[in-house]
Length: 390
Image 1 (spheres, rainbow, N blue to C red):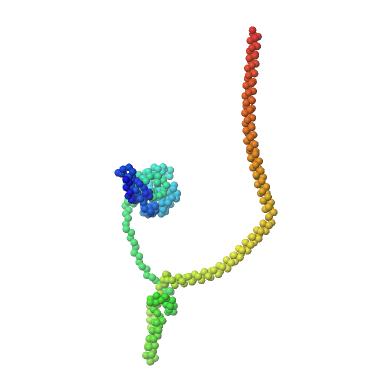
Image 2 (spheres, helix red, strand yellow):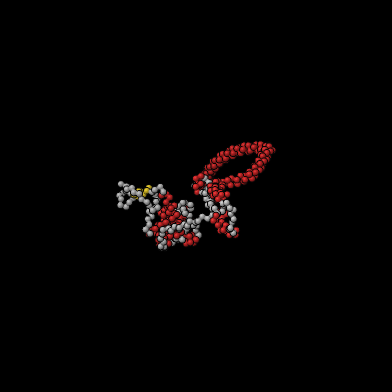
């Protein structure tokens, strides 16, 4: 009975495969099942492979020496140029094996691919890595098997050079203090009042009502002026007062931080863009109308000229059509005559062959008759000689 177990292979070659186990009886095996995302596993392996090759400084040691292009993130995962990809695979595999401490001869362009793949897989098995797939899978130069072999060799090379992975150290981000431009920071009281009037009711508690503040100040001033009966005389020096004003003035500036996410800013930008579009549209519309009128006049001229040419060349067109009809009739008659000539030529060749045969037969009969006459004459001569001798 077959035993069904979920096994994740190194490269995830098959979707659902039944592989026989060594100790099982005939007909038993192990099912290798893959998840739905296994088809994209080679893309992850390929990205890791590129990072490992960069750690091994493959750009300086292999690309520049052989005048090769750098690998993309999915170079061996997708088919592009099988010949170029297979050559790049063999070159990188040989270099990685050499980096792992095993001398390996760099393959050449005209080497036997089967022998090269066999040597690479034997070196891979010598590192203790499994390669339970047919070598023909590597001939295409792309796919998950190619990514798996190169990734294993890159890991062995990193181990040999003594590289070890460490935990990442994340930098501590310092919060930058928000700075407000000097020209935007200083606002007058009238601008502040306008901003406060435009605020919504749900944000009114975050701002000071300047109208209430002014009313309270006005009432306090009125109460104090009512209490004061004498005329007040200032005893403060004007120069000292100006110095104090200059000293306190920077502290009296009202600063409001602008937020780019505020909807009011977006509304203002929309109005600004709308006005710019309208102003540009007026100029553009005039040019477009002018261009439309010119194109319309040109089309009218072309259509009228076309009608005039058609009227002038109508009789020539009719003559041309008649000539085309006569030409087609002549071609048809020619085809028919050509067919008759071909048939008569074939009959003539057959008659000629028969005539040659008859001539040959007549010649053979003539020659045979000539030979018979000569024989009869010779026979008569011999008979006459014999009679004369007697």
